[in-house]
Image (cartoon, rainbow over all chains, first blue to last red; front, side, top):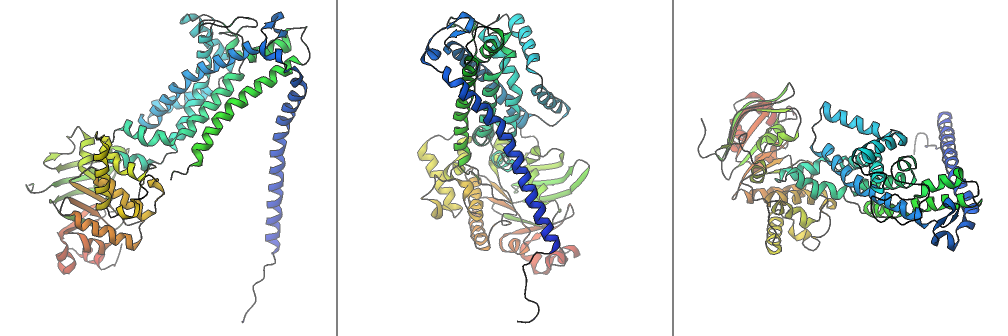
Length: 295
Length: 254
């Protein structure tokens, strides 16, 4: 062999690049870990201080003494009612609006305005949604302060999130699929139903997760529209008021004096467990959908 | 003047995108049971021409079509039922599009869209179309697997089978061999030769020799104009009348 043999020793420039690359990797790793720390700390504190409160009575008894004593199942039931109501309303409406915007609407100033409005709506503070709910559902539509009015308010609050998540997943389906289907003589709806929707399930589930998170956790939108501090009665229609976990947490941690010290933590722990459990189901579905490679 | 025998008559067809012209004043006829080849370099207007034929201009914002396109005696711009029009005129795109459905459902899609429900009838259509597209032997044991995960060449034959499932009178092929290996290309070309007995084909291709092998007549498009149309044998046998056609056929450009 003639000429120089190839060497693999790094040049000065390469060495510098590698150092920078290592620094970047480590610092980003540090930032990521830093984000996990508060989450774990919160969960840790809740488990340590709240779990002694998870007694048999905590889950089975009716609340007593304005909520300072007794059990939790009634607010838990109320939260599930409100979340189910919000889902039932916002998921179909949001998916329908997303389908219209993504598949039917032409790109003109009107649809662009609507899309900007939707994104902005997602950023409106929840207390503003609460006041809207009081005006629109409690008074104007005369639902009164009720599960129905609170669910509607939560639905309005979560609609933009559902629309944006769904629309993004619809647009992730390649346009070539639509054109192939149209060229076979399919109508727009046939194309949506047979080709587009079956491939955007994960986005719709993302929307569902976000709705559940916010509907379970929000306090402001429900405290003026349907949730009450203390009502030890099982609601028997959607026009009844109800207790709810998030508002109950607010009550036991700030409004009452004679609360056992572990109670707020026990309620908060339950709230987090409910959110995590509902999300786990949806995330499980989503992983199954994504696991199948489709194209 | 319109040739009464023609399945497709195009008169004074011009296509613009926004203000930019893509095709200017094209006249041509496609006869029944004929393979009509269209050759020409990129940006000649070949794909735009195909898009106009079955009203796919509808899907492209800003695409404007002027002139007359008569299909089976009807002006396609007066056809209200575009879905029926598109069933009569099948399309195969340059890049194979296996829909993310099973192989069976890919081929059964068009029949289902027009209302065929009976399993036996669908089975018959699926088998017949896959056989005609020379794909049946390779996939008959796995009709339930995803069509979008087949190899490129297989997906293109699946696309052809899907286009055939609507029993079109006219099949539009847009550079079908761009993403297909040479062996599969030859198999598809054999398929097209057999189909000639049953329907008309407009074959847009950037392979000059492919047009020579398949087309009965060939048109040369250049920069948005149809330069000339002639019987393929005559065109390739030295009968081209325009200098630019001769140059393109001899590989001096394009």
